[in-house]
Length: 71
Image 1 (cartoon, one colour):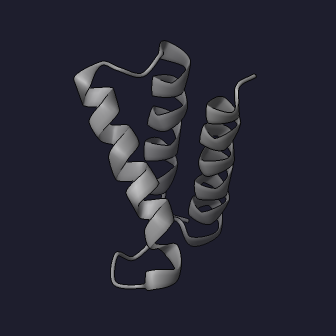
Image 2: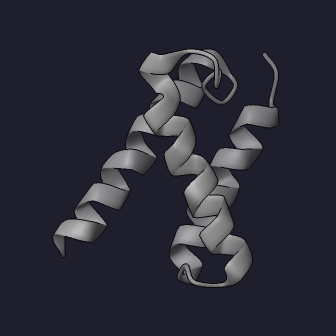
């Protein structure tokens, strides 16, 4: 696994944990979580451009679905 892949998975896990805890994406007005939100936006953009592999697309779609579930 490359360093880039490790960093991607770290970003994914961090955002997944955040969504599990808060049931939503980080607030863009709160500086402490802005990096997570930027990671999400960047990867959504890559997804739309078709530059992400199928596995990453599936994982991001899963995150997207998680935040829509209200408990």
